[in-house]
Amino acid sequence: MSSGSQTTTALSKYEVRVPDPVAIDPPPGFVALPARGGFTERNGPWFEKTDADGTVLRGLRVLPRHLNALGIVHGGLLTAFLDAALGAAAWRAAGRRCVTLSLNVEFLSHGRPGDWIEAEAFCTGFDSQVAHARGRLYGRRHSILTGQGVFALLRPGRALQALPPDPDQPDAQTPQD
Image (cartoon, rainbow, N blue to C red; front, side, top):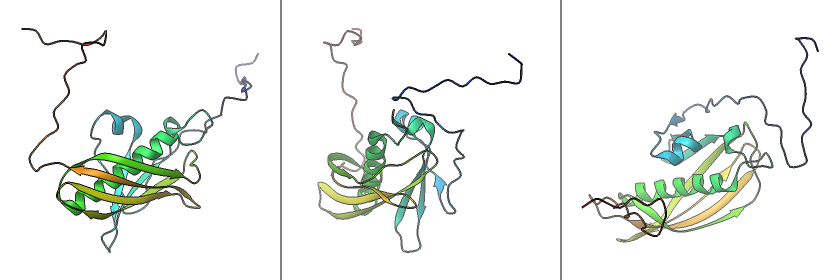
């Protein structure tokens, strides 16, 4: 075999060929959001833009790491991306951090490598304890997902406490006396 030739491996019916690396370049006006924990570090980068009317949009460029075995964006990533956008809308409207109590989504289509996906989310109401939000994900050509959520509003200045290790788990570490 000559040094200039390449070998091509046939794919099984369950494998997909991922295209060459995708450029992340967001559309004008979008700025990168800081990663806040392991999930967004591994599943980002995520971007944000505020329109002139105050509408907040979030954006995501679909990268190979975002794909499932069928070569389309993993539904869990799409759901988490919408959840984060809905939570941000609730936080901005209520002025308090929040956590998801309930999330309902409806998948309408899918995303592919290289697609730019935007999330549009609105808080539809809140009281002293919960906020409600709804939104959608869409690409350049189509709607991908719609959803709505209910969010518990955290008390100002109060942080969530980490749960202690589960003693029934084999890798649990218990504090030393």
